[in-house]
Image: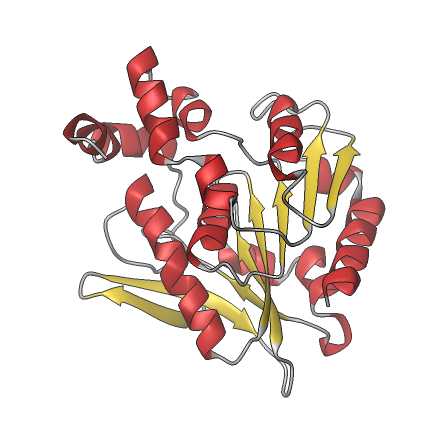
Length: 254
C-alpha cells in the first residue's frame, strides 16, 4: 500500500464518516487481545463437545449483543449443532483500539485464531454488509475455512467508502488494489451462500452478482438467494426462507 493510500485510510474524518460504532456493556464477553492497545470483546456461544463454529462479522451500526439473541444465531446453534462466535470491531461495544478500516480487516485474523484455538476444526464465516470485508479477509488469512455466507455484501471496497466520502478515480483504483477481491479468494474452493435483497439501495444487487461471478469456477458450490426487500429488512421480509437457506447450507458443509 502506497503512502497516499495509507494517508487516506488513516484519515480520522473519513473513518468517522464510514463507521457507526455502537458502544454498550456486555456480560460474559469473550476477550480477544490484539495487542497492547486493543482488546475485542466478542461473544462466544459454545456447547460441550462441539468442534465446529460459525463466526459472525456483523454490519455497520449493529452489535454483537443483539446478534446473540437473534433468530439467526438460534438457528445456527439449534440443538447444539454449531458453536457461534460473534466478532466485535474496534470501538464497538466494549472493545478498545483505534478504529479504521485497515485495523478492522487485520483484526479478522486474530478473531479466527481465537476461534481455532477453542478447538473448532470446522469454521464457517458469515459477513453482513461491512462484515463482508472481514469475512473475505478471513478466507485470505485462514484458507481452511469450510464455508462462507455473505449477506448484503459489497464486491469492492471503493463503493463502501465512496458512499460517504468523495473519491478520485485514482483513489478508487487504489482502494480496490488494496482490498483485491480476486487475490483474497484465489485459494478458496469451498461452498458459498450469497443472500441479497433485490431492492437494496445501499449496496445494490449488482454487488451480489459480481460476487457470484467471482466465486463461480473457484468454489465447489455457490448458492445465490435473491431475496425480497432492501438492505436492512432482508431478514425480516424473508425470515423463513432465509433461515432455511442457512440451515441447508450448514448441513451441506457440516
